[in-house]
Image (cartoon, rainbow, N blue to C red; front, side):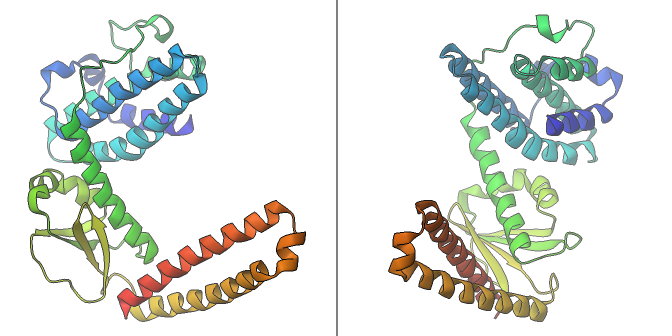
Length: 305
């Protein structure tokens, strides 16, 4: 519940009293991220009701958890920050209204599981016409409402940002360094990406985002593929290339030794026959994990050479 509490406090601290009173979404012209999170709330409500009807309370709770922690806290709150701290006051107002709407929806769905904490958070967002949460209307969801365009567009945004973050993490790019990102082969995705450009730049900690159908791949560049598009992050100036190559080479040598020892152990018939099944299973899993890491480290080293 800490994550929901923190997200709710963040939203509350960015609201004026009038924002809580005026939250009629029908009067607002919402952008795709706002349509997406509302759509995801609706789909979650449908899923929760379906599971509750079958008395699968754990599955209903899982659906609420995944929506709250992943869609809302991990993604939409981060998008909302670009609205709250941006220059467009209208977009900030729209995002504030959507945050209130979604938080109230989450609290309603969570109330049977955590009545006291949800009632407390609900009190922060009550307007003059709201009753206490325990006697407020339940959310059933609307099967006729599904915004596939919003889902697809935000999914593309998430994939691009995740690809950039993964590269930054795997290549040890410092948090205070902003990267240049080039995307080749954008095609029909150009308009979607351009619509989210400011959000992608903020969430990916990007200095400059370049979109092109054809563009030369820079040297010493980390690469990812997103929906058949190639994403390039030039590393020169972001990291100490010599130091990073030395670190990766050292890690490759360490992994190579560990892999050799584990392979010998698993090739030993006496070990496999006499060791408990869970120990053999653990060694096999360790071998798979180390092989995956070795391949990733090698790929990163090849990029830099």
